Image (cartoon, rainbow, N blue to C red; front, side, top):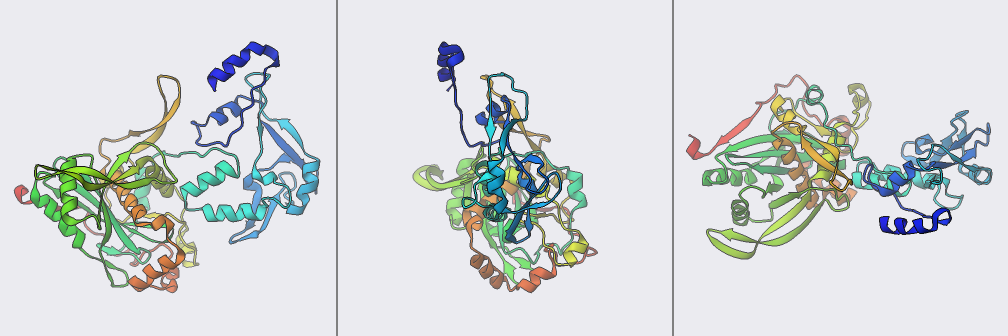
Length: 454
């Protein structure tokens, strides 16, 4: 495109370059850069009540929760409710107005969202319904902002304050799964002298609870270390209903001692274990791909297609995790009144100590420039250790592999029946806790020592 623009310079004042596109990610979108360099024209329409001219913004569209058919637009001037049928006259009386000073006086830019769709096209009620359906899914919200609002998606990778997370920790009986947790996954991070594992419970809307944290000392070179990890696959955790629960899937990183991970995975079977490889970048439509069959070396013998490998776009799940951590939560009074936590809420137990919380918030997303001047998003460590965040990403990938992002309401209802809970049980405790805050917190860390460490 740069070459085409350069060639148009031959025609001097007669040249016209027309750029049109759906925006993508803030800071990386070419069309966003071009619009910001223009006079940024918006289509201003008059209020049918007070004649105040304004351009339509999504945050002025209001409706009753769960009733998108009640959608109406509130005027910026008089706060009067504007109904859909007013739009025809408003559009006829509208006009384009510049809202910025362009870098080049000859550059004009236009922005128009689906809020302006003529009556009979995409209505405000359908826009409201699309927003309600998208909530809880980064992929869906990104698509909504890109295609309906014509806005860029902001990848917010700012790490939450670990001390703030400490203040929001909750209390439930150690080693148990709160009411809302319906299945378990684990993420395992292989290090030189240990394997760290975090167990997470997942519920509707991908609400999640940290259930267990283990440090299996010994490392991938110690057979006893792998035996302890094998034992974990058969371990049970008690649900609040009294039902025992086992891991539905454990995702283990293959970045360190790949052959040892493949060998162990083949030994225990790929039905419950998913070897994963993290890659940089975002892929919201499919953050986990695979499995692909890869060659593996087992006991010195090379096996073609001997292992299955899943590829994880780690940036997608890191930004999702940080977004969930920043969500506002209902107060205790609101919970008692029946309010539920928003989709994706992350619940952390009292035994999650400061070191674990620091690891959980050890990275942040920044924009860097390449040697050629292009913008690129990159994760940088705030602290040296980030095992807790990595384990969360792998456990989240395991939930994706199981299909949790795509399960129907009937599937979630089946899981609730399997653990023996009802809708009343969920309504009784919107936070998902099953024990009072006064219940004694569990140990800060559980360590399983391999034989050679004794």
